[in-house]
Image (cartoon, rainbow, N blue to C red; front, side, top):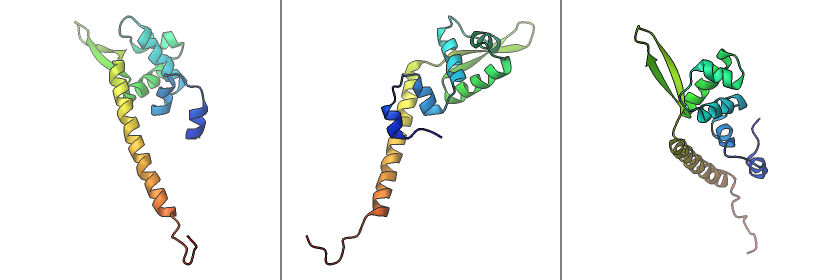
Length: 132
């Protein structure tokens, strides 16, 4: 169960916590992202799996979650003799930050709407005969 907002505000968080907070990413996802960020060039799934010391299929699932969240990019490399493979690299941090800012703004607007609905729904009518 997710922490309440007040609990999250009281916790010490690092910027990498945004990966979990905004997209529900797991520690392995963060490890794979860090492996890609620290690499000098794009990596294959096998290279990512080796850097995070996990099975290829496990690393692949983490990479798919990162792709879905927009944190990494996939590029197809073609062999001269036919066939291809994929390599992965991190998305530009400013693009990720812009996407998170848009998501936060949308969330803020939605919460404002729900707070207004809450106030309207539970507003107490003035009591008849109440003294002012």
